[in-house]
Amino acid sequence: MAKPAKKLVIVTEKVLLKKIATIIEEAGASGYTVLETGGKGSRNVRSTGHPNVSDTTTNIKFEVLTPDRLMAQTIASQVAEKYFTDFAGMIYLCDAEVLYGQSFCGPEGCGI
Amino acid sequence: MDFLSLFVMDFVKQLQSPTLAFLIGGMVIAALGSELVIPDAICTIIVFMLLTKIGLTGGIAIRNSNLTEMVLPMICAVIVGVIVVFIARYTLAKLPKVKVVDAIATGGLFGAVSGSTMAAGLTVLEEQNIPYEAWAGALYPFMDIPALVTAIVVANIYLNKKKRKEAAKALEQEAVSNQLVAAGDYPSSRQEYLRQQAPADNRVKIWPIIEESLRGPALSAMLLGLALGIFTQPDSVYKSFYDPLFRGLLSILMLVMGMEAWSRIGELRKVAQWYVVYSVVAPFLHGLIAFGLGMIAHYTTGFSMGGVVILAVIAASSSDISGPPTLRAGIPSANPSAYIGASTAIGTPIAIGLCIPFFLGLAQSLGG
Image 1: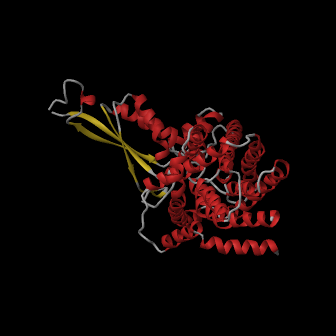
Image 2: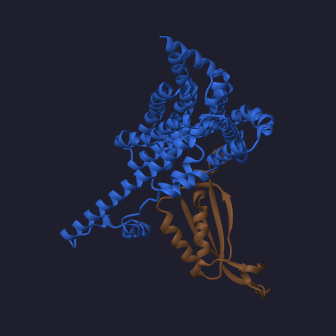
Image 3: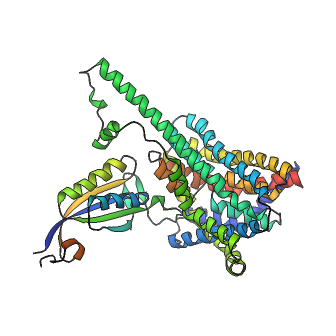
């Protein structure tokens, strides 16, 4: 049996990187992964590999594993309320099963 | 007539100079749909190299020069940076279909300085053998930071005022008709609702803005170079590495900027057309104000004509590296397509292509 968890995914603008990281840490998540991404949404195509000299058009994608839905919702609502009226952003939640991950499962392991 | 012929001659010469040629080349291949990609990492390192070189040049020069000469040009730079924002606030913002916050952000970006435009200006002056104070590059932060700070402060004052007015209006309406609530008056989303409930004033703190601009990639590279130039002996790396590579790297950066300018024009089309007019006129206007102030410094403290040209060029330039992220964070409600589009697609090519030869010609016809 693997340890059940929720995977919270936040896709937003790179300028918010540090601010969102702080919110995630304050909510008590044990860690997160950030990827640089691009794509198309309601605010035009972003980071399509066009050359650019500043980072304003780059998108990032946070992936956070949380032990329960509540923590994920706390993070999501804080991020959305603070930033998503003015910045591009998208948040969704998935079910996940953690197989390995010391910091997430604790010393007794994930239970496989 | 003398001035005009000088300008035309300079302009033709400029077209053949690597700086402008690569810029136009970049625009042309982007227009033709070229698949050429210059990796982002390379642009980052080029920006670092160029600004470190400018910083080192300045630092080495400051080491053996009289610092009091710098004071007046510095004050001029600060004045220009602040004025530019207010020009945008009282011209561009008043035009139809232009949102006030967008206009203020555009003003901030046009007041801020572009490291690459400045590098191009310095290269042109060197090519023409026009002497200038080597510390002139160090004027950069004195125009850049005041412009960004003023823009963010003015925008937030405006937004707070607007919010208070709306709050007062809402209260009035509530008093008049308690039951008559039109469906359209409801906030369209939960976020908007929460925003309306939020306390009306968010005061702007100036220091974090200054801190953020100082920490930006362009300014920190330049200040590092400046410090190293003043306090250490970097002459050997300067001569063997930073100085010889400067022009080559600048040409790559110009190519990238040309390509980016082209890809942004489409975005600008979606916002009001007035931005196009503003971004063509503003570089000249800002440059002329700086040129005038620089001339005062020229007659009173002997600021060189080359220095006056640099002051005018950095005033004409609009920030492309560190300005946009600072403004995006400082005035989140302004539309980045408007201000980044105006600056990158039109402002920068105009500043590099037309303003540099224009102010050079002006200086040559005035100063001989």
